[in-house]
Image 1 (cartoon, rainbow, N blue to C red):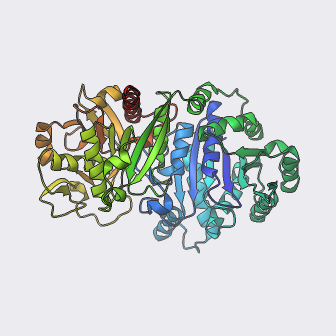
Image 2 (image 1 turned 180 degrees about the vertical axis):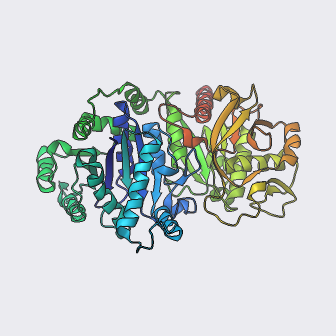
Image 3 (image 1 turned 120 degrees about the vertical axis):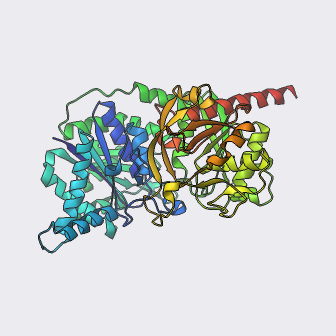
Length: 543
């Protein structure tokens, strides 16, 4: 019988439900269980694909091309699993399915209602996610905060799951905030009590309380929470800020949460294999080296807009035993008259990040130009590769005015243009080239050496491609087309061999990076950045 864990949040939003959910999944994975993560998102959008990154953060793309909430990135990184379309359940998707069923006549003329029809569809999607991955445990996070009106159908559905699957197979985890107030930083449990009361009004009594706090919770506080919230004391889990988010599963393990969940769900008691995770955390907390990587992007004002890139750099530091500091640079800044060297001088490497639209593009071009000319290790991602091609066309190949059709439809040299299959498409949702695609790498290139293979797959999210009419010209001037689609139609990766590290890819390699399996392109960039940092340090000492 599949087991189900449902994670809800209370008091305030953004308290770390996604990390809590991912960490609980890690506890189970450490015990050898197969886990299927699911995000239940109350927003009416069918998926996250059309959402503004300033408001919503990054759009995480799965292997099968689902555009999802960034929490699925946490699930994949912590649990080392691959999510899918079935891992993301939104109000929009649920109601679309229900309405399509009604139009087909599936309800035999009955009145279609939230209960039972909408809640049944939510439950069906949750159960199907477990079946698709043959999971021992499905762990589903409900987005938003208890008390949000849009969350009610999801909360009612997970309440019903206790009856459908059996009480012994369902566990509810509530993530709450325990604040401190006043000059003596007195710990207050009342917000958590009220949050649990609100949850009980819906018919759900939590089995575990994860209490986010900035100070340690004394035993008297835990006893009070246990008494007023009717949760065992050993199920009141203190969750403090950690030096690295990857330490959270180890903290939960130390507090006995893994054992408690296993016992409560009747899972076979297994020893937790912590060696790999403990080694990862040890390096992250005590690295021997350090470097600084600049990320030039269009949405850097929202730290979540490039979450997977930031985490991929953290992972890349692990095999290099290094801490990677990030310098966030809004690409608009490079168009305001500030020279690139002023912003990039203290950096050991550069990433030009993805994005859409013409705003800030010239700033990205300037950043790439400076990196190419100064030998600064460089990695371009998606739009970052297209910008690298534009810069190379203008400043190396002499194609003045070269641009992308996306930025300038009437450019004299459209070195980046619309994918043929995208022509005529007007709908914005789930219509790009999405998901995992194969790529053939040229033997002997930096990319092929880093991957250790000539055949790879990477995830994509784009509408535009490098114009094949200019391939030969780029090659003549020293740019290597190092990766192409199996039919040789699409340019997937480029590099400049004469540069210390200059690699750009049309794909999104950040989505496949894991702390236990850092992505080779990011690891290669950090290695090159560390070499540059050491060289600069030596030069400074000699001077």
